[in-house]
Length: 177
Length: 177
Image (cartoon, rainbow over all chains, first blue to last red; front, side, top):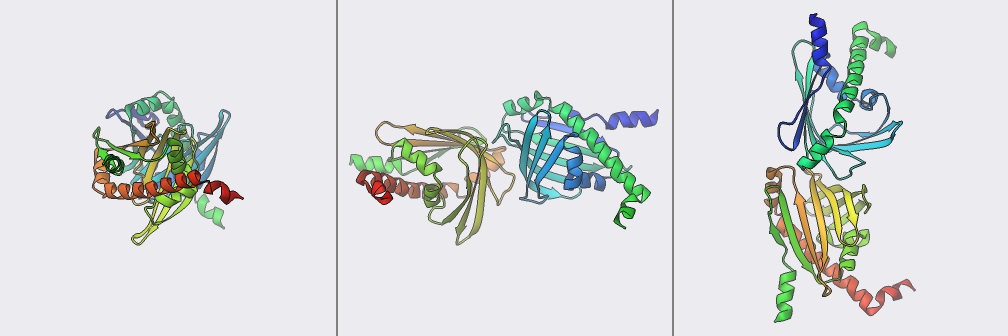
């Protein structure tokens, strides 16, 4: 029963609105913080989860202050580009970056992503998005964001399980021979 | 006396703070609106005034919705990059774009630029910048922005006088032969 409760708790993202221009997202992952950091910043791993199973082309991912990122997602519903720039990169605990979708160019949010080591092999991600206006924030909330977010995080769960699994069984090392 | 008063009025930018996250700039130029629009959007002309006399490399200037812009200014004090993306382009009256300085990456303002035809051969530019936070807005106000702005606008005056002069004397046409 304990295991089930833990799993349920970790697989739902909690979405709240702490101020009239912010969205706060919280989610626990069953992996150590260094592994979560790796899955968030290594292009090969990001490509496996960010697009929720859709093909994702990582055009740029320069994980450093001032660096740019740009991802293009290819789904049945079309091609969608996303881009931004890193304001702050502090491994393995904090990333501040901008976020912009090609469909609404020039509408830019500031995402502050915090990784908290829970001390038991799990990691809590807290992501606060700051919008220029309340209308833009509300537009994001009504866009079906939460469903897409949970799909991405479920895909991230699988990436983390795979990475951890490979290390635990020594597969990663054997691949290099 | 009238001429002097007109000239004085048109060569000072008025800087105000209509809300706690905005800066509003207003300035009258002695040129028709189409000419001002051209000087704001044609890379060859922008290069002549935006950098206030410093060398300005226009790396990108895609004046359309979703297009990007990036300018690099080379001065005695160093190399400074600036960039952003167009949210809205409505010739010859309105541009909405983002603005970001490489020195503070990920700090993004929304600039709404409006060109008003004064009906007497002059054009009023109104530019409202929206910041994510009041602290960022105040930082911009304290950065010496107003001096740099007036230098840029003085350089724009010269570009406009030159462009208008060439057309009035027919030089532009003779250059093409």
